[in-house]
Image (cartoon, rainbow, N blue to C red):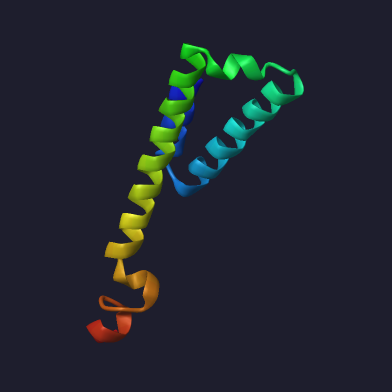
Length: 84
């Protein structure tokens, strides 16, 4: 499941939001079922770290796109500057 969420988080901003909500749902389910001791098992920790890595990479990619794209903030490359 964590690999699917990892890949979903890296598809699009909306994919990241969906992946975060699904991961949150899984955490709430563990809390409701009182299986908090399961969080500290090795397989669960690896799944959590895999998802967090995917979400982190996604955030880095999204912020990098926003920094390098000047059209989001009205700078350079617009129709006004090209003579249209």
